[in-house]
Length: 165
Image (cartoon, rainbow, N blue to C red; front, side, top):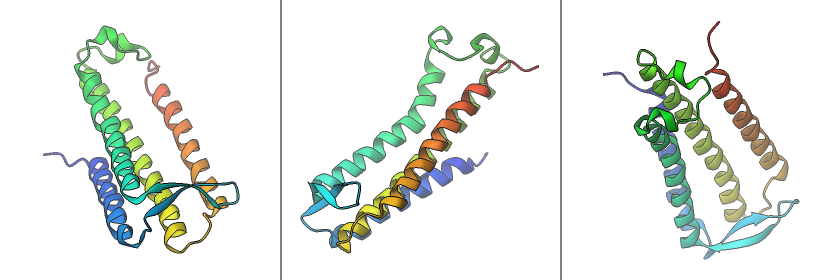
């Protein structure tokens, strides 16, 4: 049996995400600061229980996107797939490796998304528990890194389905 390291990392990060929520939950007030102005001051709030439900829904959405989209792609008839050089990459002798590649891409995206939200949550929890402002510079750096990754991910995904020379 082949061990999928990316999937192990993804589920380990999901565990960190959930553990983080469980750890901070008792220390949060009835309302959680969930939106901050450009100076990091809280200006939007959510009930604690609603916040936790939102966080689990977000996690479920990320996991569904990461794990189910590749499965859906495999189940769709080839004619419905919009893939560069589709006929070449989904030819019978390359189809399974193409699907493996798509799964790998989406698992990597899931890893980065769960890591991104875990880091952002840490900043939000810290701001709430310590009653301090969100560190705007750090938040912007994390968002910039995430956006840069997504742009690179899209480019790499598109380039990986070019015709070989």
